[in-house]
Image 1: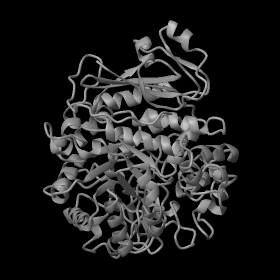
Image 2: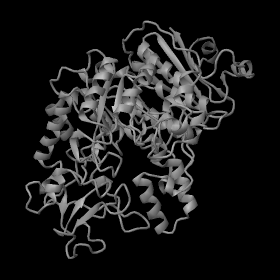
Image 3: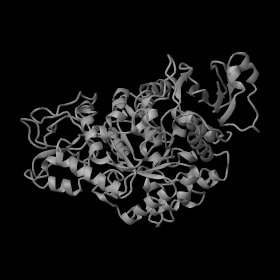
Image 4: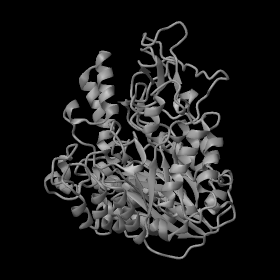
Length: 617
């Protein structure tokens, strides 16, 4: 775990050969187009703050803007460039803020608009940017737009949402009378009956999150006007929640089609009818023209896109098309899902991860750009999921996985607590969970006769609440998160896993992240270099090279708790190369297998060892 070194390197991209994935127009031009200087975000790292769990400044047990402002020293010390702020808008909190009732105000639970303005100023003063979460596939059912829309079938805002009558020949409320058979992401039908009008409204998520109708130009202009208002306040861009779901396949008669039936129930999978729909590129290009084009500012736009393919992402992130800068794709975080979905957990096969990451690196090499992430507010903690959260290996495995991710080509995202090696929580029973997805799944599964122990095992492993336990600042009661009672219990391991301890220990997960972030700042090869996957069939070692000009990096990661050999090409020459980063320190005993491995044309790796080696020529 040696500190990063600094040097001046060329930013000239190499030409793609038969094997390497070349850094092409996207890396060279970014938002500015091919041939211009590299986009600023190619060397940036983004840090996600989930406000309700970050830090509480007033003792009510809920994180707030004051808590974020009180911990900016932590983010500055880490070295991140951008803070992505999960929603702080006014909200009934049905989906922890992703159900917005007023886009132009801050929820009193989080603070005030003046405090948000102050946070923007504080971040800018420290050289960091603020990206707001933008949730415009749907609103809260308590938003004024929906209240008006639901007031009457004749409301001028009726068509701002998806209202439809029951199926032909069926009465409102009859079983199966919903306009389509689509299942909601949060269980149950994706349609809710309004008894007053006898019509249903669409909600792909909670029934309190009705979908906006983006076919209506008035909806689009209202959204664009709101976005311009935030940019004028100093916000530096948006992370766009499920933005590829805004375009639905609509028949000439206004109808929406059923999806294929889901085995074991009456509902169907409607995803083909609303994922990357027929007008999605048109709508995002329009958004860019109406909101971002012509602004003299360094902005960032990130589209969260469930179900997006590499081919889709290449179009979305092509600078010449001016849609978004990068996308969040979900392929790699679905690799441990079984036939029963995310709560049907299967062990990760490293070869599957290589195939996925390698495909995305190749697909966005010449055009477009990748986002890189393990954790976010919807994913379990990576050290528990793909690493080893035992006392023996937690730090080392967290550092290994961080190295693996950050050395790929793309913009890394760090979720709060990931830099501390925070782990999944030991939820004892369903009463410990808070997330609507987990609660609904538990109820639905038990009603269908599932074994509760198996259901809870899936929720403990994959539930979103794992990411939402409070940030562990110190070893005091409630981990320094609040002086009151936290809205969700603090992980009991905060007595040893916390920011105070990590920042005081140069060998911690925190300082390893800090050095990786600095490495991207300092070395153009990390941001822009070619990517070549090595050892694609090895189930233990993840290895690849990055190359820019005459500089090459070799990254080798032993993704296991036992010793391993990395049979990389030219292993003997790499054995003597400069080490830029590692998960072991020089005063730790080397592997006893070093000489034997070299004789066999391989590098010896200790448990969870990751190394970044550099050479020229």
